[in-house]
Image 1 (cartoon, rainbow, N blue to C red):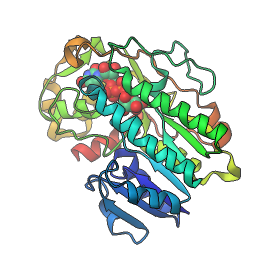
Image 2 (cartoon, rainbow, N blue to C red):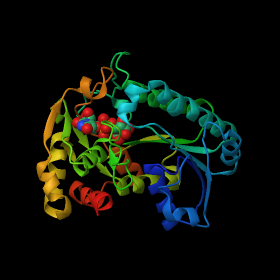
Image 3 (cartoon, helix red, strand yellow):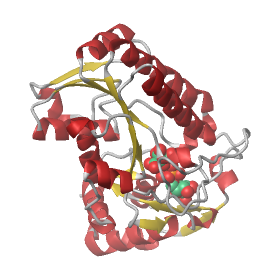
Image 4 (spheres, rainbow, N blue to C red):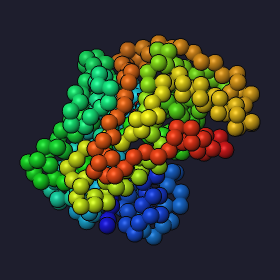
Amino acid sequence: MKILILGANGFIGSHLSENILAKTDWQIFAMDLTEDKLGACLDHPRFHFTLGDMTQKTEWINEHIQQCDVVLPLVAVATPALYVQDPLRVFELDFEANLAVIRACVQYKTRVIFPSTSEVYGMCPDSEFDEEKSALVTGPINKERWIYSTSKQLMDRVIYAYGKHKELSYSLFRPFNWYGPRLDNVFNPKPGGSRVLTQFIGNILRGESINLVNGGAQQRCFTYVDDGIAALMRIIENKNNAAHNRIFNIGNPTENISIRQLAEKLLEMIGAHYPQYAAQAKAVKLLDVDAGKYYGEGYQDVSLRVPSIAVAKDVLNWQPAVDLDVGLRKTLDYYLG
Ligand code: UGA
């Protein structure tokens, strides 16, 4: 199989590339702006990498869409602070630039596996989000945080329509707070500069206080990246065409904790297992900060986000296997080890 991965140097792209090269005989054609997360992949004979901007190298992309069996367009802005600070960039990259890729997949009849997001459910009140039944609930236009959710949602709807009316073969996957090594840069000192786990690790490493937005009672289901990638591999394999034109929540419903608990757990783990940072962790304070002050007035939060994974269990025969404690230790080993 020949696979095209756009954004291969990202968190998901780099783990996926590594996994494919280790476990299959598939060929990867890949593009990204940077290559620092790709390590040994870069020298692998089945990894064909080109540095470049997806909005510029359209000819290269179209040629490869034509030649490959499946395309994973993983390029996106995925950090909430940026949804508020630069909403147009989110729309232009996450929606507009990716739409060109989807249209080329329609034109060349190439299968596409698109990263939707848990964020499409927004403030949905369901206790478990269901791919086919849950309402997608976002806030008013002046809450710019929702531009990511709605850009992704519109893309999901466009892809679904291309599947129904133009024979596009697709699968949509919705990661629920995947985490692990290579998530975001912990050395980015800007508040909100990265997703919550790497933000907190960076705070601890710099000896700063941890900011709990609106007190940190909001909950997330944290999903270890190896589990997420295992699901993605099954979607790509597409045994018996089972993943054809389906949507999959890929998350760990049992590892549902509040952001405050996450901060406390990290401090506890660092105190117990990383003696070089123990004193620093002990001195870290947990501060309750107002969301509007931390992110800006365009922010609104999700208080509960639990996936139903019945479809993934049923269709892919997949379920998460890595406990939060185990996944956090692996992540801390990577960042602090
Ligand atoms: C994330 C991002 O939108 C995407 O990466 C992704 O599509 C999706 O969720 C996902 O992975 O499922 P969110 O979980 O809100 O959204 O993003 P984080 O930045 O990881 O924040 C999680 C929670 O921690 C939020 O409630 C946020 O307010 C809080 N937080 C964040 C703090 O309390 N303190 C901080 O310093 C940073």
